[in-house]
Image (cartoon, rainbow, N blue to C red; front, side, top):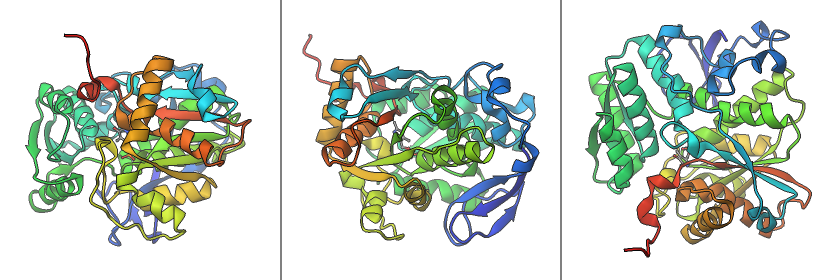
Length: 385
Ligand SMILES: *Cc1c(COP(=O)(O)O)cnc(C)c1O
């Protein structure tokens, strides 16, 4: 679709399209606003479904790109797997797992990368820089390798080894900071501010790509489900999914919106705490959790995720490392699904919300499995020599 302008999600200030803008001057997230009228009445499920079931099936919903600049590996098109056993503990009528762990680099980040790195290619960036807790770095390293773009990644001190190996395999230059993800973000941002290196990360183009998780869910289920459970790190996936759902509503492709269950780690509960305290102020924290992929102490898209939770009349839940680990084991032992700890967080949160009496018995729920268990083998004890 044609981009009309960029707009701050908090103060509403607009910026012209084509401007490289990461944040609003007020410090908050920026979203891309399209010329929706152009698509109104010209898009239907029947036409979309003539294309392969994958992220780019919904290409009209992303900023326009020349074909030669699109760097893609067939991301998306992930399965929606019906729960056989965990559904009993989650108390709902039906539970479906959206298998984002099956993307090319093992997490949903590839949906954001295909849009964001294609955009960097179109811009002609020779190299780029980003901060990552691990999965985004692994994904961007793969997409930049494919696109012939140099890649520098700042990672927190405790980044899991396999995720570092993934980045290294694709030729990225890894710079480990002596601190958490927020410290890594400061360093990446400095490269942009001082040396004008193209900055990648949880910025407007990435969230545009992550909308496709909800496009695919709507493509398969229509409006016939009640909740989507999503983990929250920076909050980019949650708000991207919500933006996508609202766009489908605007264009008449769905007629009902689900409620969003936003799940955070107890030791990094920024957005959930603000939601529960009914305030718009998100207080940064120093993360204390084993769920490295959601350990974002100062979440870039926190205020947008918070607003999405409220708009959807959704639920915010926090889970301990132990609760997430129980959910991860349950997924592995009872469903055959191998998730990393942060990837099991949505299911842990759903079970907790049910135990707290927040989910109805007849609900139909989608839980997003965000990352693959193979990324975190050290988390499992192996009893075979
Ligand atoms: C990045 C990531 C998250 C968190 O997503 P945000 O967009 O930062 O909120 C959750 N789980 C996994 C496996 C991730 O890689």
